[in-house]
Each structure stands twice: as C-alpha cells, then as structure tokens.
Length: 572
Image (cartoon, rainbow, N blue to C red; front, side):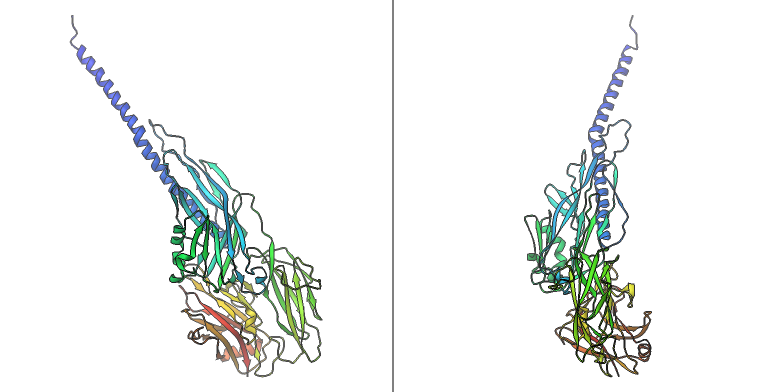
C-alpha cells in the first residue's frame, strides 16, 4: 500500500536543504565581500581620524614652542570593527606611535645684528638635532595606508611611492626663520588611545636679528625636492619672499633640504626645543648679551645695566651666576647676580665722584664662565660681555640723562622697551610689540642706525609694532622740539606714528612719520616736530620724555622696517 504524501515530504526536505544552502552561500559571500569592504572603510575612517589627531599634535608642538600651554592630544592607535551577529571580524586593528631620529636643522652663515649676540651667532654653522614623530598603522584590510610623520613643522603622509605633506611648513615665512627641535623618547603600540602632551624645554616668543652674505637653512628630510618646492613656492623672492633664486634656491640632496636665502637682508630667527615622552634633555647657558646697557654717565652718576643669559636656542636661562667687575675708577653692584626667570641679571654702575677736566672710560666686565678679573679679559667670548662707559665731568653736557645740557643741546634716549625685553616699565609696558635692534645707534648722530621692525602676530593683526623709549633728566623748558633721523625701507606701505605719552601711557601728542623718506628716495633724513602744550608741560614737570613708535594699521598690517639714525629732544 502506497502513502500519497511521500513525494510532498521529500519536496519539503529538498526545499529546506536548498534554502539552507542559499543561506550558507549568502553568509559566505557576506563574510568574504561585504564584511571586508565595511571593515576597510572603518580602517580608512580611522586613518583619517589619526591624521586629524596628529595635526592637533603638530599644532600643539608649535604652540608649546611659542611658550603657550596647549592641552594634551589623544591619538587613537587602533580601532574596533562593528559588532556582527553572524559574521566574524578580525581582531581590532592596532598601530604604533613613536619617535625616531629626524636628522638636524642647521643655520648656515648666520650672523647676529647685535654686536654682543654676534659673539655667539658669528657666522659659524649652528646645528640642532630633532626627532620625528611617526604613526605606523597595522590594518587587516587597508593595505595601502600611509605612515603619518611629523618632522620640522610639517605633517606628511609617507606612502611606498613617495610622501605628501598634509600641512604647510613653518620653517620660513617672509623674513622670519622658525626652528623647532623635537626631543624625547616616545614609543606606544596597541589598540588603545594614547595622550601626547608636548612640554616646553626652551621656548619663548623672543627673536634674534641675523643676516649674512651666504645665509641658508639646511634640514634633514624624507620629503622630495618637488614637495618642498610646492611647500615653499610662496616664499620665492619673485612672490615677495626671501628665497634666493626661486626654485633654484630649494634643493634636496642626500636627504638634506637646503634653502638659500636672499643675502645681506635682516632675518628674525626664532627657536625652540619641545619635549615629548621621556628622556627629554634640558638646555644650558651658551651666551651672555646686553638688554639695556650704558655708554656715558656724568661723574658721580649711576647707570642701570641689564644683561641676559641665553641658551643655544636664544631663550633665557635662569639660575646662572654672573660675575661683574670694573676696570677703572667706578664700581658695580652686585659683584655676582643670578639670572632670574627671564634670564636677566640687573646691575648698577656708579661713576667716580670727581674727575679732572677730561672724560675717562671705564670697562665693565661680566661673565658666567671665564674669570672676570683676568687681565686679558676681552668680552668677545660668547659667555662674556664688556661694556665701555665714558664718564664725563659735571656740566659738560655730553651725558644723555643725568646732567643738564646747555640750552639747545640735545637729549638722547636712555632706554627702550620692545618685544624682546628691554625696560618693561617703559610704556607700552607689557603690550610692547615689534623689535628695536642696535638701540645705542639712536643715541648719537653718527652714520650707524637702529632698526625698528614689525613682528608677525596672529591672522587679522598680521605685522605690527608698538615700541617705547624714555629720555630721562630733561630740564624744564617752554618749548621742546623732537628730532628724528630715519628712512623707511623700500616697499613699506603702512604708516607709523610717534606718540608722546606720560608714565601711565596716556597720550599727550602724536606725529606721523613721512613715508616718502625711503632708502632710495632720501636715505637718512631729519624730520622735526614741535611738541604741543600738554606734552611740554608734562616733560617740564616730570623730567622724562616717553615716546612710542606704533604702526597705524589696526588689522591686516604689512611688514614695516625703519632705520633710525638718531632720536633727540631739544629744549628752547
């Protein structure tokens, strides 16, 4: 006897088997195609996230180099894949973030404009070792993922076929040279997120004016010459920059980038050393320089002298004993001072009480290393300074502040305040911007000039300066005339005002400098201004002339450089 449903039961079994087969095939296809594609997309997105985090690390290093306080940045070394109910994922991807040797940055043939700083920056090459920071991914599927590297202010992706920068460069911007050395040991691997916190080893916003006939920058690099030409194209001389010869001034040979700069121009050199991880090495004192000196004083008078101890990155070093001694009849106190948090040591020179009818010169010697009392002391070593002060008899009228010149004799400035330091009590005090170099050249009518130069600030403010001077010991008068000898460097477009203020920085009078007085048009030329009654009354009563030099552009200012032969005040 036959059962009528035998065939139907067999058909159901076959259908179930076929359905199961299709399901298995579908799952296999999903596992072999969809899951890898989705996981590769996860890895790609993670790589983009890491690149963004490393851009934050790079920006944090540069902020730390500017003596700011960046927050730590978290970098995710690896990533996990989405949870799947039936499909199987590979283990979480991992990565490694580590420092390794990045070569050196070398300043070639750079000589400081300031005479004392030039004992250290004397045209010999100065090299600074720097580390690279590299992220290496270990993905299961994204096989062409790049290594991402930070080196010498640039973040770039390194592929098998070459490297491509993902940020701009900060080594060179107009007349500003920026060296940031990375130091320390960091090595972390795994899937977790790690925190990277740059720490300042030697950092400030200080710059040093340098020049040279064959000045150049050399940088160890893994980037190609074409890539550096792309990064530096806006710095070519033809584009308003300072790279000599345009493309021919940028070469890469044997893993070293060489950038040739336009010769015999003034550059602002800013340097820093930043640490990451462990084994960060400190810096030490390298040279001594003058912040506020003295060139003449009347018999029985005094002068304040400020020096600064700096490391090889031109930044201040605290806690360094500096000895002082006088070769002559005057005295200096203290005989030993210790550099403060700004790297500065402050002394007071006292001239002898009486002289015959002639001037004498005292040599004041300072050092943090060489015995200060040795007979062959010259002050030409980087660790030493020698200041020669002319002591004049009372009533000679040749002193710049502590005596009363005859009517009509000029008063020259005694001290200044700019971004690099000087006397911070002079208006605009802590708001000083820009740089005044070779200040002593403003104190006499010779052919030498002081240089007044804007500094680059943040976007929107661009180039500005606000620099102050003080002329002390001015006798009462009913009329004062301010005399300035100067010229604007060719191509400057922004205006500059000279502002007379009181000790509290309240404006009393204001004059605009003549922008037609340029190097090629007039050379050094005198401009004179008669002070108004408010300024005259204040100076007569207070005995001090406070001047501020300020750019007039409130935002978006252009680069300005003025050479000043002298600044002087005449009383009627």
